[in-house]
Amino acid sequence: MGCRKNKYNVACASDIRKILFAWLVSMLWLSVMTPMVLADETSISVTFNPEGVIDIDVTPKTYDFGSVQVGAWKNTTNSYFTIYNNGTLSMDTQFKTNATTDSTSLTLDGDGAPGNNAYSFRTNGLDNDGYITAAYGVEQDTGIAAHTNKVCGLCLNMGNSISQNWTSQRTTIYLQGSLS
Image (cartoon, rainbow, N blue to C red; front, side, top):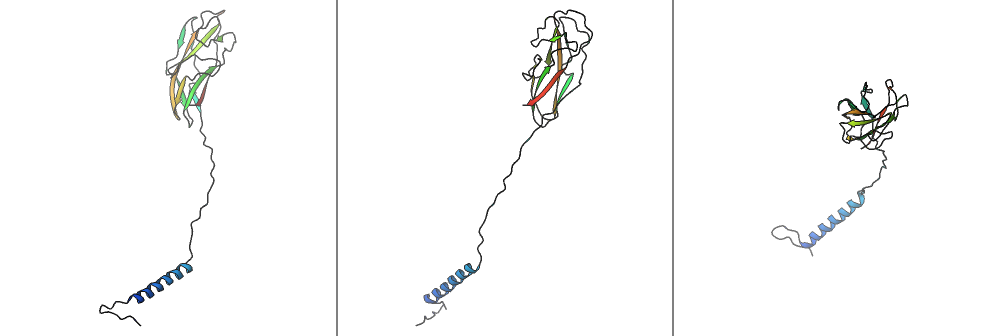
């Protein structure tokens, strides 16, 4: 018993079921025949060591205070020396001295009150100006950015008495840059 077509030429329900069944079988067959690709994942382990450089320099490298009277201060201008941070990191700056002169008869006083045969140095123009001692200690300047510079001066305080009249004396002041 077949289905009769109506006046609109529409297939009957059983014909529609046959068409749907054929379509379903075709889709199943197509999905079996078509390879299925699944996503896959892998990884790369990356290691690196971030490094920065602190590279400090100062100009000029020498200064001559000339004659300094006993019990008196003698100063450079507060912009005489230029400290350069040639590194890639911001740095703090510390000062120290070798604590004696080339004759070894004059010695450093680290607190600014030099007595007999003694002298003191102090920074001038930095963030935390202070007396220079024989060891690196407090930062006289903080946070000099990479590839920049800062100016400063030095102050010399000659002790209140000396035991002789020396010839010109020399000492060394060191600067150290550390991570800010």
